[in-house]
Length: 126
Image (cartoon, rainbow, N blue to C red; front, side, top):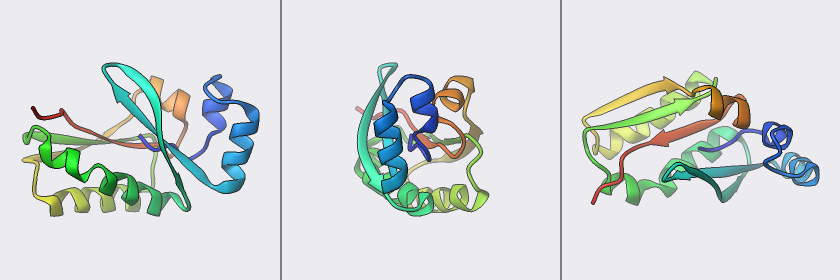
């Protein structure tokens, strides 16, 4: 997942107030990786969310190409349709997955990460 704002991570105790403030000023968008049910911080992106999301997906290209081919999910908590469509078009252009699903993030992700969060979910290949 890529988080649009650090406000909700701070409110949930996942980052300090100083980190949230600095992240807002510097327009940082952290990547939250979920592996084996655990959330961990990953790369930090900088800039407008539209550009950040595409960089996030491009950074995963190698893993996406190795993933199980049947389906991929674009999960978000109220992202702009334009951003979601760009991610969907990029995934179609990779021509890896049989099906691309768009879903809304559940309560846990939405409450901890806030609105504007987007993630690309897939099952890792062997």
